[in-house]
Image 1: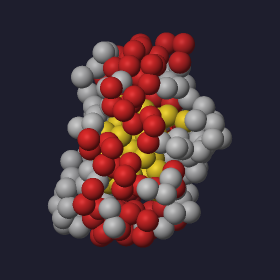
Image 2: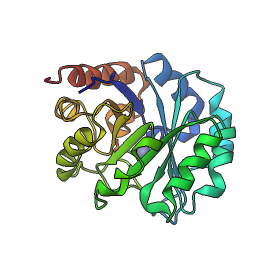
Image 3: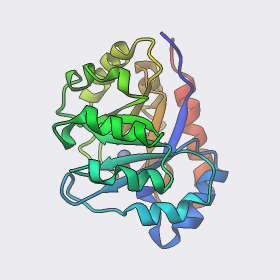
Length: 226
Ligand code: DX5
Ligand code: ZN
């Protein structure tokens, strides 16, 4: 089994949106590896966040990768807009439409890294046939739509199975929802290398806490057992 490098990806959904630019700059300085950008349409998920124009406006504030999580359906009509707005990877939900492989081809055609997310109720079988088309697999450990929800315990076993399914393929394994320094070690041991965290990093929106919180998740993840 390959050991993928640990990446901490703050979810800017938990940012203070009245100071969004400052939050990006603070997270960058605090050691974020990726920026996790949550896009919600009020249709695929019961919440609305922001779109490509907002994303484009914050893109210039950091050179770190934007890990864009599209919780929208249909998704294909918007892939180009998010690519142009500066996404580095674009993750679509397996549940978002009937032609997942077509969506992945569209992301590839934009020259971006491809990701697929699966909701808690979606079996891993949904991605078995497209493993050669993805750079990233996102296992949702909450039902998407909101930050601050509790980690769904069953996700841990699904992550172990996802890790085995990936095998030696060059695919990052990402978790999103209820992630903190308290479960990062177990998640890393199960195979996670990309840790999305909203509340655990940005809760309270005090920039002086960001670096120690990112470091705590990273340290817990790096203490994974082989
Ligand atoms: C929710 C989003 C998450 C969210 C995670 O649908 O996909 O990225 O921000 O928030 P926490 O870390 O608070 O569970
Ligand atoms: Zn997300």
